[in-house]
Image (cartoon, rainbow, N blue to C red; front, side, top):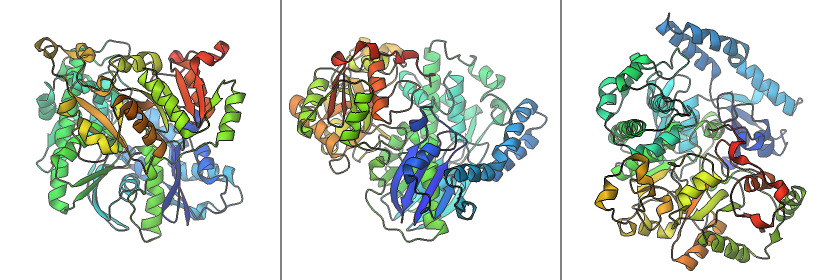
Length: 607
């Protein structure tokens, strides 16, 4: 049985294909259209997933129910009336003209793909949090698990708890809109001048520069948290229900500062605000997960929804020890809803039996790949000058040497990752030992804010020697501290620094991936899941004694991760990346035609 899953029309549209329960392909539409967070019908992603073979599709599953979402919108406006008239006038024409009739729009788009197929008889709709929960549990390596999903909002639900057992997924309780941890965090994202649904990870990265001096303020005025972790927000301070902003004047008065404009400097105030909301999020999630552990008596926990991309909070949950195992869906946001809808259709609607596998998600390497000859042809057409390595070992020698010499190296190998993280398939790599690498990558390669941290990739078998981590973290969704043995003690003068002043202090043997609080967003690399990337780390360790390198996504600020060899070459020529490995093709910046250089610094709208 072949089931196509689709998410679309809000943000991060995607498609996924499963065959008899096996995850075959999945990709976000943005990777093909080159529009960040593309919300349009994912026709390109569907074409990739199916290879144009629509005749063999048994079911199509959409990731939420539009009528329920419209019901929530109408009831919210009625509950808050007469507030929100301006927002009502803005949103209603869009809903009545387009979103309310999404089934019709979906069928119209599917018929453009194949007009002869009876799509309506095959079209299924899952609820939003059902899709999130299915993406987490059915893709996990667990026969039984508690499943917690958290995001901004689905149709009505913002937080849900389910228990998974075999092919069954039973929902136990939920928290409804407008009470949402995702929207609370997005409100602070908006308040500190970052884009909602895009800049939340910036807020998370900013938090370690500050002190949580407003945390009690948030607990007293913005959120009422019960002992079991359930919560309610004080809507006096928020405008997202009926307005065109996340926060209002009461919020600004509470904290004593106006909303930061994107072009204004970040101050210690903003860093302290970020630290405060991150601490509150950590605390609420710990209350929730402790309560869930007591209630379900489960040993395993699965997480999904946009809040599950907060790897700092995930690290706290893991270290808390209430669950023996914590598994986070790597495409935890709305893109992963496409996969979850397909899995829910297969196991819940069709009632198929489930065979548990330790790597159902296949490392999240579910996107397109390119054969060597095709890669060479595309690079020649793009005007690239390159050599071809005869063996993988020759390629690894060149790459590891360049990284050890302090160069930024583009790494384009195998199938593209599904989800927001680069996991060693579409990555930019650097030397984690270099004190200058973090600044170089931010300012000259990624063209983004200097405070942003970078993640380490580490050999799985060496991870516990370098990080305080007793579990695997293949999807870069857990934060752990750098191992005490690898840290460097700070002087009293360094300890007294504030804010961005902390950035240039070398805190460990791997300063490029050590955040200002000694933490790191770790990716453990397994020989079985990604053998070539594992071999590169091993080669680098042979040269340097260090099994850790910097891994950041192959793109610049505001650009989707590269998908094709042409995308990679353009990004290579538009940045200060010094070398590029695509398949066995090896490119050096110094060898390229200067006329092909581009300026990627302003090529994309900042995220």
